[in-house]
Length: 173
Picture 1 (tube, rainbow, N blue to C red):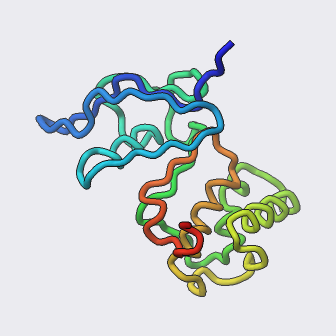
Picture 2: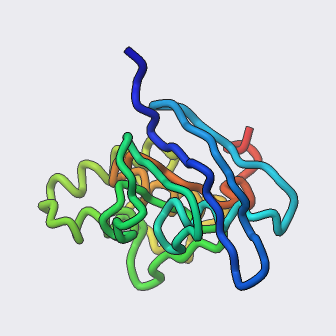
């Protein structure tokens, strides 16, 4: 028996008036795999990611996560996290508070939040920095904090828009 893909796009399209930003894109992403969308600037990559995340509604086609259509599911109810090209960390919060923000919004208790934040910071190579202010980080480190903030929520689909742009050379490799 074949596994249901983590993500499936079926003839997804997006038009802005007469301009077709995305035209009949279809693909599936098998469970537990990485998938990259490559193309020149302006070809619709970010628009496609924004549709998957629920920030823009397709004008045609269907989006399925774990076999279920999410077209009518609002962004905050989708099992999706997205790291934007121009990430936004909360400057008034330390690194740990930034990473744990979504967990606190979900009502996870402090001890579990702290444990999960420490685990994911270690995973992205930032162990031991939870108490530091965000402005003490390099651009690449801030990118890793933004990725950690999404990873800690354990989404079914993690979307990264231009994920390598600000990362340190060592981590990119």
